[in-house]
Length: 219
Length: 243
Image 1 (tube, one colour):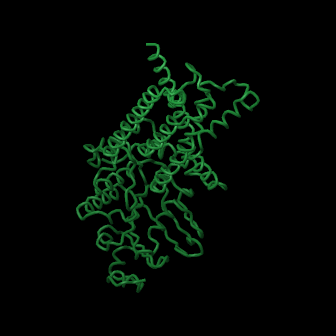
Image 2 (spheres, rainbow over the protein chains, first blue to last red):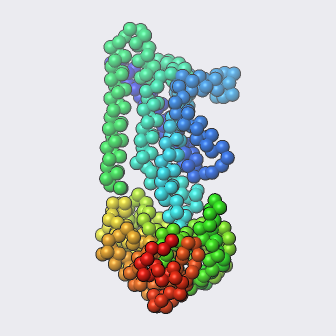
Image 3 (cartoon, rainbow over the protein chains, first blue to last red):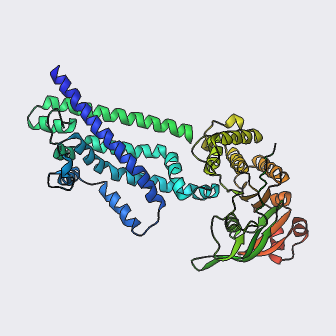
């Protein structure tokens, strides 16, 4: 029973960290990506390239950067967030944000190309067009959000560095798998791996179904 | 059923004074002067590439001329009481009713006023049974009907239409033309481009004929069809290829 409670705690923490990171990344990345699609400014191309490149940011590097920021002598050291779930959320947000921004920009750009004249004719400013375009791109945007969730829930490097894999506090499914494998406790590692896979599979199935339903329903 | 028309000062006539449009050193429209008079149905004719769509966009204020100017009677650069319907209707990925609601919300109408206008518009155009359907899944003819209904609900004094029936079959075209005649009877000024001669004859009260970016005829439709002065227009009516 104790083992089960510990397992549930690990699964719960994993979900809490990843889902919160996805929410934060969406809150920032959806408007930012849409703004990047509509705005024209010098250096826009460079910003787009940087966000595209950051989609491939190795999680350990993201973890290292957040570690340096949060460590006692770092710029955010006073917050004392290192080795807390909040630090893990921050690290995963850094990983997901470029995916959400880049995909949103690409989706919104396509819809904008189609809607531009009509929205202008109806009297919508560029700023007012942003929520319209995000809403009308909702089905495609869901894919990007899911990709972000997938990346965050699967990664181990960033949460290991900034979370520290402390039992009962910052141990997630992926860090537990790493630890149990190195301890030779393969049974538990495999069990956790199956749970992680099942969660990802379920979420993707639900999202795919929702996408199909929405396409049929909304055209 | 007609709209309660606003009593604000009219925006027509719209005057184009020496309007030209260049892009990357290429002149697409040059030295166009004409007035869009209130209450008329003006049909803009000409071959592909003559500049019909461009002229409409300049009038509507979607783009600014690179030479000359377009001014409305109330002195504004881009008047409020106008609407445009495009060749391919661009509908939002939402229900029919939500598509009608959207431009009203942009204009800051209250929820109550919007609901009333949407209901009136659905009723006026027989779209009631389709109200909750996703607009993108309607047939081409229904989509264009919705686009026209959306334009009407914005209470325009002038409605611009860019080849509104070129993608539609004859029966859908007839419905659209009947809607336009209804708008005209309500006093809405119509400015329409078409390369369909039959449609021009059915709808036009005035004709503006464009050739290679120049306005070479602008006169009452009866005169124009009886025998245009310009050889290019005569050739166009005769069905000759001109370029």
